[in-house]
Image 1 (cartoon, one colour):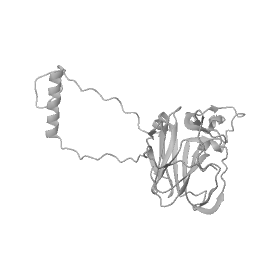
Image 2 (cartoon, helix red, strand yellow):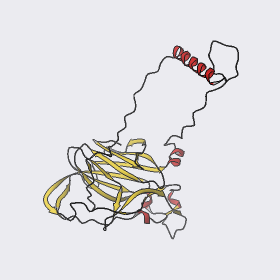
Image 3 (spheres, one colour):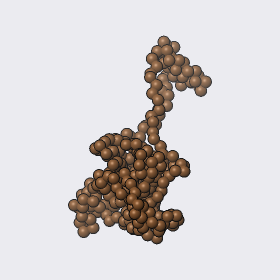
Image 4 (cartoon, one colour):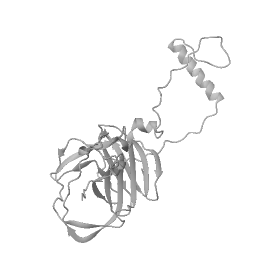
Amino acid sequence: MHHKRWDTIVYIDGDPAEEHHFRFENENTVSCYIASEAGKRFSVQWRSDLSMTASVNCFMDGVCMGGSKTDPGRNGSRWYVKTDDNIRYPFMFAPLVLTDDDGLADPDDVSAESIGIIEVAVHRVRFSGYPWRHTPKPRPMPADRAPVHERSKKAGAHCVSLGDGFKGADPPYAGQPSPRVIYIDPPADPYIRFIFYYKPREVLQADGIMPLNPPPRPRAYIVPKREPSATPALYANDSDDEGREVESLLRYREHTIAPSVKSGPSIRRVIDLDAKVIDLTILDD
């Protein structure tokens, strides 16, 4: 999605997810639907063309999973969450566990409404001259999510989970003082907000949000051979005869059907993942 000189794209297994039903929620917020696939990893990639530095915070199912600062003209990403011991766990989609046991899940739990949402909040920031030492805080682990009550109407839904952890290298600035970040936009009112509603492909198709899979292309229609007529037809002959009949039909169509106006290819913004300007500076709170 693109809004206010900022691009944000969700990649699933390295490929950009197709976006459906793009719309403006309000002046600062845009949204769309994407198809999630259980067991597949995903990442959130963005590029800033703003005139100032911005702070980006990513929320998965209502939980903040970390943030980064991004300078003008730079790229950024978020594809994992890390713990205090610098073990990193990549994001992935997983089936949501449901239960009808009121003792295991609260049927009135409002937090269930955030399941199925990836949100990216962009705030413009500036830096003060007073240094401060950043202390990372542990993040909640979506893999430990408790079952959700069936009455939450989340049947067949997915949630954000975590893949196997791996040890990451300490950033070069770890433990060093850095300038204090001052938000220009109120924390509760970001300058830009991107919302990705993710659901299984089958659910999006059933809801009419995503088109059904196209049927396989039909084979050439074959009619019984008959006397030649003014209208060419395809015959069930050998391959050479069939090729000649197809060519004849195409020539007939060219002379009888007005050419349609050609439309250019649709423009799709893709973030260059191989660029050397990706800003992965972590500002975990």
